[in-house]
Each structure stands twice: as structure tokens, then as C-alpha cells.
Length: 390
Image 1 (cartoon, one colour):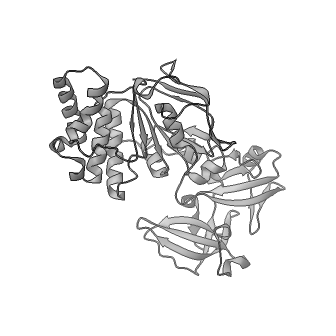
Image 2 (cartoon, rainbow, N blue to C red):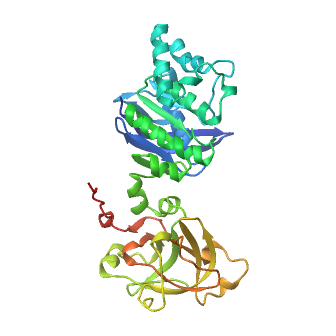
Image 3 (tube, rainbow, N blue to C red):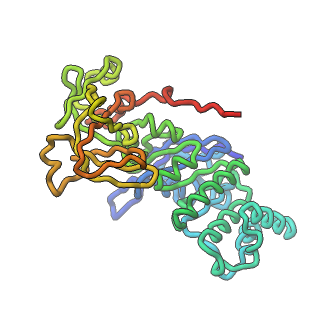
């Protein structure tokens, strides 16, 4: 097992004299046996970071260390790292057994019977022991992915690297494979770095997630921390589906004044803002409550009109416009003129219907409008601990 560290790692590409910084001074400490997920939009530097760890890309500056030893100058084969690619990269003319044993045969002096034993053990773990004599063309996509994972497992590496290994699978199989990958990683206890652009994979699989944007690490945290205590507006908007709602406001006499609403703040929340004049108010869709007219007269209740309702089975995503917002009646209404609330799937609500939206202060997030830095987040201490019932 191994601890993996990145210290100020930077990757520059020389594009005809115009230097492009793909990864900008990334620093990470990944614990022994940890499952860390690199997540972010396309082109943010996730795969480039993974390829530098694997030795497939050189490091422009900074260092990568494995158990305290710098490995920047080592060849990929000498790093004790196994990588699973987005494409399965199986040899089409070889059987599953031959694909899984090829790396051991080429890079070790392990006896044939020991290689065979490790291959069969890994195949059993991945549930493909009955496929060992088939070729890749005879396998489904999910089976090929299991073979690619099994090929990495037989090497017993210090670190697993996985570059969007489930992206070619259908939604149901992806969900199943996520669970299997987590179980496998926990059983093996191997330090793992997993790359994905899918925030659902990141939130459900990682012990911690590292969010990147434009080559820069934005936050490294547990999934729960990244969701409820985002470091900045980018993280808040990227993590969560539907995305967090944002409202641009100015601070006036302890109140947030937006284009269509006035939001009073408590003394504690005002203290977090300090002297910041322009503040972005953020609130997640599931934290917005739709209340009836009898109880909807609080200082954080606002009259709205339903624009669009998206049923998703377990819930409804309800797009709302503030009552009296002239732009809400325009046919070219865009996201900046509406916000979304998520309500239970058994609640019936229709487009054009009036609704009172409550934005509870204990659930809001506040960001510096100029820098995007988080000024105030909801408190994770408010989360409810579920006691097991015996």
C-alpha cells in the first residue's frame, strides 16, 4: 500500500510558442488506501493529472512522490502503478486469460502457475471466471470493463489509477459497476485515484473528492463537505443536480437587495459578510420550500409563478419566477430569470400556478460576487445523525 503526494505539480504544453497551462500547481496528499476522485468539467486537467502520476506525461514543475520517494524520473513500468483507461485497451487477438496475464508475463519473472493462480483469483473477484477462454469480441461492454479492471488487479500495484472507466457503459450498468468498484477497492485496500466528469460518481464513490477548474484545484474535501460547505461559487454550482440557485444582491442595512426581492439577514450571518458590498446568495433547490398562502407570510417567503415543472419520479423540479418580474412572461426566458425548487413527487403543481417560495436562512450560502469566495455556508453540525434500530 502507498501514500501518494503531489507537490505544486504543473503541466505546460507548448502550442506553437503559446504556452498552455493544463495543470497549475496542484498539491494533494492521498492517504494509504484512500479512494480519491478527481472531478471537474471537460478540459479542467483531470486526465492530465492522472497521466502525470502514471508517467505518461512529464511534469513541468513540482514533484510526485510515492511513500516519500519522488518518482518523476521513473518510467511508467517502474512506478508500481496500474491504470485503467476509458477505452478498455484489450488485445483483440488474446483471450481474457491472456489479456490479464500479459502484464505479469512481460514485467515479472513470476512462475506460470503463480500467474495462472493470480489471474483466476482476480477473475473470480470480478465475476468473470467463466469468461477466461473468450476473446474481447465475445464480451459485452460491462464484461470487457471487468477484464480491464481484473488486468490491473493481478499486478497487485501500490496505486490504482482509473480514467473514466465507466463512461462507455449504460446508466444501469454504470450504477452497478460503481458499487462493485467501491466494494473491490475496500476489499483490496489499494490507494486509488479515479477521474470522472460525473458528479454522481464523485459523490457516491470517493472518500474525498478533488474539484478542478481550468487546471486549478478548487477544493479537496469529503463529498458531504463539498456539497454543504463549498469553498467558492464554482464548487457550489458544479456539485449538485439541479445546480444551486444564485441571486446577485447588494448589502443594504443588513439586508440583501436583489432585482426582485429583499432578504433580511440575522446578526450572525451579517457578521460573516463583513464589509463585502456585493454578495451572491445561493440556495439549493431541495432547500426551497413551497408553502401555502396561510403560512407563507414570513420575511423569507416570496410570491412566485410556476414556469415549468419537470417530473423526475421521486420528485418534481419546479422552475419559478418572482411575481411581478416582467421578464418572466417573455418567451425567451433564460436561467438567470428563474430559479428551481425540488419538491416531492406526489405533490401536484402546474405551470402558471402561483406559489410561495420560502428560502430558509439556515440553508443559504453567501459568496463574494467579485472573487467567488464563500463567505457563509450552512453548518454541517446541523445534519441529523440516524441511530441504528436494533
